[in-house]
Length: 506
Image 1: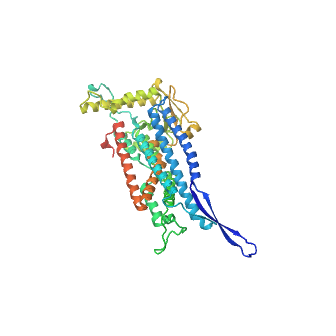
Image 2: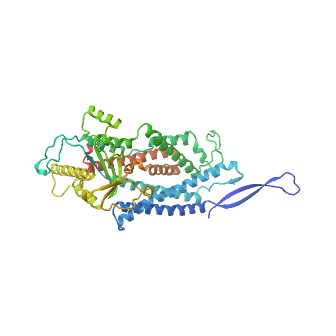
Image 3: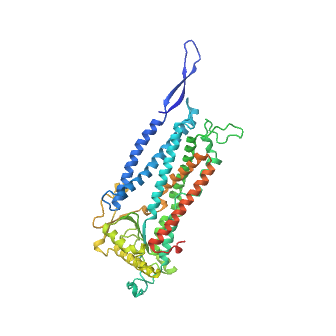
């Protein structure tokens, strides 16, 4: 058990002496180890419950009734992410605690000394921080793998002006059409662009944090003395740095700047300037292209982009007339259901629906045996593309009674817990979504994960080098590498799943 030393000054009157004097009483009090252990116990238990809930939700959405290796692996991945949050909260709490107690004691009668440099408390603190970084890195890898393996398909609703027949060798009469492919390419490019779109500007984040720490001088609060002067003179005494205080001030500044950016982006910028996520939904409607995404085996998202005007492959004048009709409410609403403007949905498919989807989609993903010529493979994939497009169009138009769906709202508790209490049964389910939850397949919906990961990278480098400039450079490089990896592999997955060649994805 670690101990912390306190000095308490008590006014005491000695008999026979008129003026009172201060009697110094020093005592050893228990340090923060006991509180830290309690915090780890309580938060660790909550982390296990959260991981179990997430794993249960994933298993239900993947139609996996029995425990297998994948379920265990998913539980470990979710538990790593939640346990990383526990380590981060505890280390941040320790850092802020010592900042407040130690630096604020000049206004108190209690004298508190910092944990000794290189002592057990500081060593444990560093271990907690490194554990948080390692576990949060695993959480980031899990998120990347999930996003880079989603199944995505762009549904073209455009009716061809005239039909022509493919080569007899394909056996798909009337499959090809004269409808322009550029609308699909446009949607694919926009999706490719928003894959790494975030609420926080990473470069601005680094610049603001470095400005506050180095130029404003907040780093001087991490010194092992009671001085709170942000601008000590060149001849002033500079006490050694405290690793705990250094992390406390660095992590607090990073999170504060990040929270300010998120609030500004959501409350002001997206509302009055530009909201790329909802603009993407609008662009789908103008292009007459829907987006069908499967994040898990039987769970995903649907963006209804079918044009209320029936056509989108039109001239500029006609497109402007379409927009004027919508502004004047002279046409139906854009929603999937009549008299509704909801265009985004959570999708819960039946096992039969997913099996048929995979069977049609198989030749798009693989090179079947015996198909060696590139031209033959291209024709086969093109044939599969049209077949999958017709299949999804017929599904959303309720043409197939054996594989139909219903549209409903989630219960309040289902929304809070992010789980579906009832399975799809014989019908697939589309849950109304007014929060653009399809952004879970993008960086946009994982801002907290990215923010905590970057905070840990920045703080870990600084604790090793005690140099905020170097920590900024390393964090910038890590940010760029993660973004480049997500862009490159996401672009490849998008090209493979949508049949849009990579050279068309700018």
